[in-house]
Length: 344
Image (cartoon, rainbow, N blue to C red):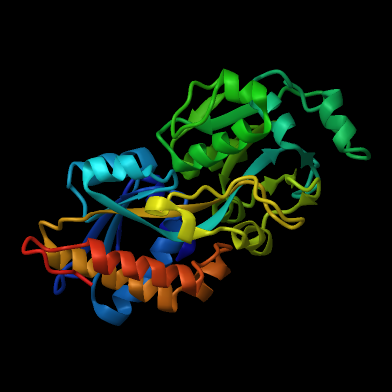
C-alpha cells in the first residue's frame, strides 16, 4: 500500500479513499507529509466512508490553491507569518512533525557512514566542495573510502516547504549561504539539478552515481536511500529517526508562537536532529462551504486522536496532546460559517 501511495504522489495528485456516498474533502500542498496523510486517509475512509483527495504538489502550490479557494485546505511545511495569515483571512495549525535528511548515492558507502556538518553541506550546495574526495569531507570521515568523483547536487525544482526547512537551516549555520542564497520555498540554486517533489529528488539521487539530495525521511526509507549523519547544535553526530526528531521537537513552545508560526531547525539538545520541522494546514477562517470545513476538522481531529502510532511507524512525530488542545481551541474561536457560528 505504502509503495502504491508514494507512486501516486509522484504523478502529482492522488485520490485517497474517495467515496461516492459522503462529502469527500480536498487538499493540496506539501509532499513532506504525504505518506502519513495517505495512511491516515486510507484508514479514515474505511471507518467513516469519507475520502480525501490530496494533491501532493509542493508547499508553494498548496498555498496558491488555498488562496484561490480551489481546495478545502492547503498544506505547507513553510509556515505563513501572522501578518500573511491576517492579510488572507487564514488560520494555520501544525498537523505533524518530521525530519529532512541529506541522502547520497556513493558506491560502496552504506547508510549512516558519511558524516556532514551544516557548514559543509552549505559548501557542497554552493558548489565550493565539488568532489567526494575533498579534504573537508575526508577529515570528517576517516576510514571511509571516498571516491575521487564529482558530487552531483540534487535539489527541488518546485516551491517546497522541504526546501524552506533545508535552506532555513543552512542560513542559520552558514553566513556564506545566508548571504549568497538565503532561505525560502524556492531559491536561486548555485549548482545542481532539480527534481519535482520529494519523490523527484529521491528518484534522481537513486539513479545518479555520486549524487546528494535532501528529502523527508519517509522518502529516504521508502526508496532505500543512504542518509548522512548530521552534526547538531551541540556538536553531536546523530542519525535521523523518530527519537532524534522528537528530541528536536521537545523544546518547541507553541504557546509563544503567534499564528502558530514556529520553525524547529537547529534546536538545542544532544540528541536533536538539526533539520526538523512541522507541516502546517491552512484553512480560511470564513468558510464558504462550512460542511466541507467541518469534514476537514473531523479528519484532523480523528488523526490527532488515532493516528499517533501510524505516524510513529513512518518516523513522523505526532503533535503533543497539549498542542492538540491549543489547535482545537483555535478551531473553535476562529473557524466560522457564513453566519458566524463556530465549525468546531
